[in-house]
Length: 316
Image (cartoon, rainbow, N blue to C red; front, side, top):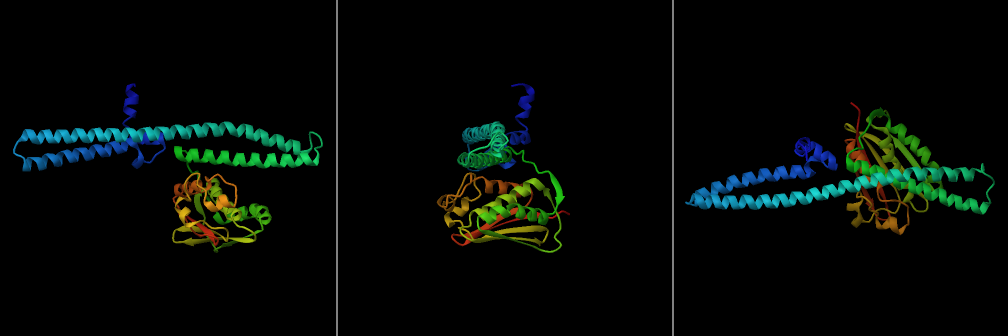
């Protein structure tokens, strides 16, 4: 290790960024805090020992023993957290590399299927066309999964930084409702959008907020069975714009609700109804809203539907 690397190891901000962790979760910060606790414990022990024990040698021995014991425990705990953080970093890098490598062949596969289905390479029998449709659908699902994995990897590495700009959330939702129209109609679902008048614009990352609404709207439509309604409400509350997306679908079991924003988690209802999904969407949604300075939550009742809501700060 050269001198520059040695100095870098004491740079808490740099080390925390390396692992994609906040300062409070960083192993180096934990070691520093434990060091301060050990110093305080040593001083307190010495003070109490001097008050009750006449022999200074015994007080010094007890203090030294306690300090050594606490240092060993601190070192072991910090090293364990450091190994966990390093393992998590390597995992995130591996997922990112693999996802990037998969994007190119999946794009080529989609392009090839589109070309063959267009008939430019010659006519295709109707029976074969059905197989191409299956290939197209599954390659699309693979691309969505790869994109979700890349987004999660960027979140964990702290590289999903918002590119803030001023835009109308009402206009964005209107466009997404129109885009989702064919999917909702095929699912026998009606989408209703109600926005308060004269809503101010927000300041955030347009593409990331779009991803949030796409995920929540897609989930709302997907988890409605038979004929259903998805209601979207947009209104201002103090210095925030609030958005609610309500459905009358299958709902979320009470026991599953505490895990709903965790990575790869899918509730029993989702598995029982065989709906597609990777279990990454809501984790991504929560991370984006949190990075944007907003809040997110939901309330749900099994077989009665769910309402997901989020807030975003208004541009000042």
